[in-house]
Image (tube, rainbow, N blue to C red; front, top):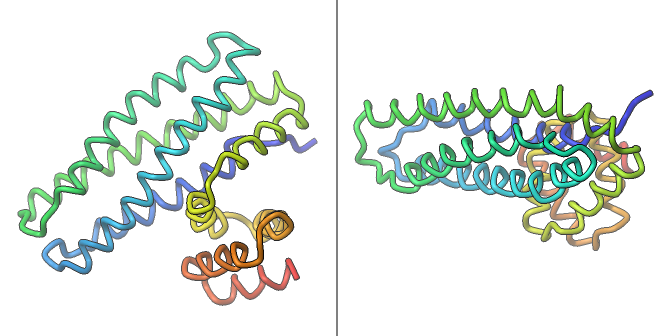
Length: 216
């Protein structure tokens, strides 16, 4: 029996944006103002999603788990504190880049981010292989769905749009088709169009065509 997976969807989005930022960080010419600005823009989106995710987990997912199984959320919360500290430092460094940095300085930042990415990926892997099972043990699927709906309701549309930008391209066609079909039912037409527009910038034309065909 397939169970509801609370972490799978947001973690796919985070792996996506972390990977895109890492790729761009590796090739960007910091002395080129347009390239540097594009890197900062991608970084700002990444850090915004990371911020939202950690607070969502602490205030919703792990809070619920703690109520059913005291102490079960301690390890994840400790990881969050440690990772947030590194994340904040990286964000401040990125914001402070002017394009006059040396090659050694930008490479040091690249290495620091790569280490953070590795540690973050290990953290979310553990959540999906350990914490996810605890959620499934202590909550029925209908309860987990209620948790998910509560999280969705608290999202302001610009933040929802940003999540969709990185979630939809990172999922299977079946997963994304189901998600978009659900959004189509609850969003105003112009907002749903905005969702479609943003994902088209992140996906191949062939994938977009197939996905749109599956929800019409």
